[in-house]
Image (cartoon, rainbow, N blue to C red; front, side):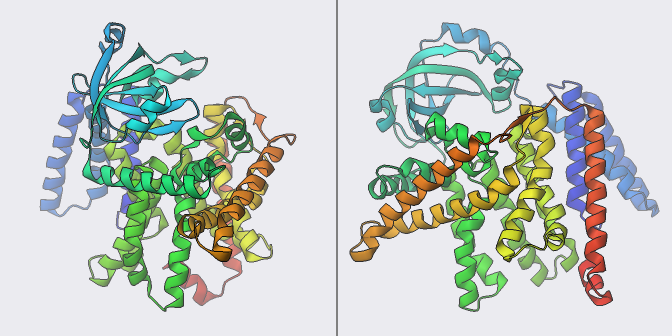
Length: 498
């Protein structure tokens, strides 16, 4: 376990969580706890006797810990579904950032008198304007249990997020402010200020910039949202590592111009990462990207103090560390589409980007990098898309050559518009220019979504097909790595291994 221990720990823990899900463990099984105790005793004895079997004992113990953790964290609504018909109103605390949509406002409510949470849909502008994160409110509306739509079990989808009921046509009867987490309270206020600036600077198309910055695709009209989904660009509407990287790119560029080192740059950029994380509201894609970034900064700090060695950390360690945090918080994240898409794409990027970028002789380097990143990520998400949605997007890698520069330009111009949109002289032109770029970019995606084969339906893959796919991916990785190594001399090969 000396090399990439976090990867082994993550895989072992996930194995235990999968076992618990297959066995439908709704509480920690006694045999899992007994097994952990026996393995710990065995580890103590072997360590005392100097027998080197640590890995053979620790990894099974972590698997059993995954089983126990899954049972401990399992949310079982039980009889809560039957109580929905008895409710006319409920009092609780707003547990998510309210999202203003075209039909009203969506939010998550933590009831005072019940376990779990409710998903609430408020009607009317009056309700939308008065509610904020952390407010203690009493809501009246139509209470319903989540339904099952064809092959999509919406009830199970929400249960994994701790939600057991829906409230339609909600109306706020009374409200009191500031009962939430202080960090998220700060994030909500900061987000509200930025939203206000966006509405002032971009009154016509500010909702699109909000969707990119905050990951709130719900505020877009159906046509725009569908066009991004049909072209395989839905990830652009979820604030993620791409968006964080675009924003941090300016920080690293400025730091390089001033001759700042990596350690200093990490230190000065961490407040920006934390601010963006709380503004987004700790959504999974941004949380994953932020955790990886924090691991990178912590690695430099720990290495400088001699706590860890240089080769202890790499992109796989960072990815596994971020995944571990999210899985410990909620083991059922493993089986959610968002988690699988996010980590599937990121793992494939870590695995394939460098050798693929080397294998594709495309100029300029920027386009080669975008295409390599798109192809790599696509290999990671293809099985997830096929299993959960029954479709893939053949054009997605090429469409990203246009879409990623479009998102980059929109975000940079949008930030400039927020900062200088009400300025004098040529600065006053930034707002209209941003609005025009958004219009062109949005319409271009809509045109692309009408192309043949933009989205292709595929049958649900069998386990044998998935195994064959991963074998093919492994073979491709080996081939690309061998080709990449042939392009390096002996000294460079030694440096790459270390």
